[in-house]
Image 1: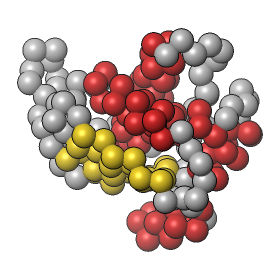
Image 2 (image 1 turned 30 degrees about the vertical axis):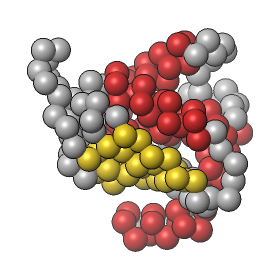
Image 3 (image 1 turned 120 degrees about the vertical axis):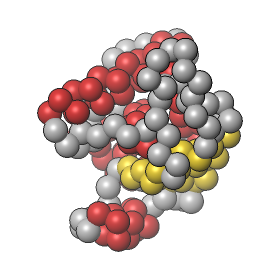
Length: 165
């Protein structure tokens, strides 16, 4: 799996953890190992510009996803997953830091960025949270992936609760 993490934010982030959790999420979702993903970390001003341009919403947001080939997980365990360009995930560490501090279970900016990376991956794979049933499915899957990744790394304590809306 080819995953590029490019930090253009000026904020120090745990790029290796972002890479690792993205790879874990894609493997868990059975995405073809030759698929490609780009993760870009930007500052609040750049994120606000993207948020206005693509969503017509003011202010910076935490994560945005830009799908390319609209890959989906295979429907059955024995299906061959398709290969292609997943797209781009854009993260904003300043927003992530604020969300982590304001969450019911306070957590670090890096933990929030890990959660947001999984959230972005799921959006690239066609998951959404507009409707209550979609939200339950997506956030449940997101929690399972983050918990699984944390468990494999021997991280203790509760996983960050979803703070993305």
